[in-house]
Length: 205
Image 1 (tube, one colour):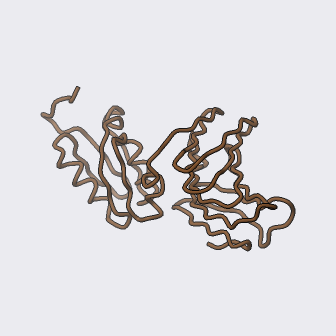
Image 2 (cartoon, one colour; image 1 turned 90 degrees about the horizontal axis):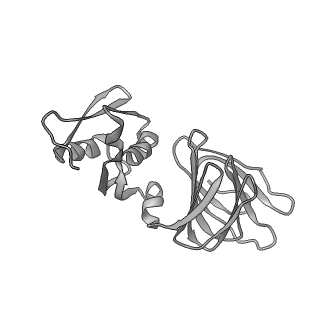
């Protein structure tokens, strides 16, 4: 998607961007529901503003990724190049530098250093995860593959994994690898994926 100012936007699954046919006024404003990667066309006199239900991101000329789904409790903004300013609904502000990620949850905003390739894997087509909880991994896959994931016990979501998977592989590629760890199994019923602990396996802790 290319906007009237030349800004390039790539939308992830289950995402919506609202934008004008042509930008007018002092700011270039769009509204995001979901996740998108932005490559902003430089215009120092007209900041580019991404509004979400968590707050807004202001940029001049930069590249960044925003994940702000309406059904999520947390918003993630990861800066690839340049500089952006974030503002929560209650006007808390934060400046991001490349390689930093802002996390907005429960009205609070924090930032941390991240591996950029993990945050934009959906753009590059390779999802990389490093010691990430299974629950977070499967939340990403739910959007990629339009599935619903269920766990035999909630604690299974906390088990961490490292690896990568190509975007256009089927979900079975990851699930088969998961099963090969020896502890977990799965079954698929339509859009539903059930993950369970195999009988006879021991707790790792």
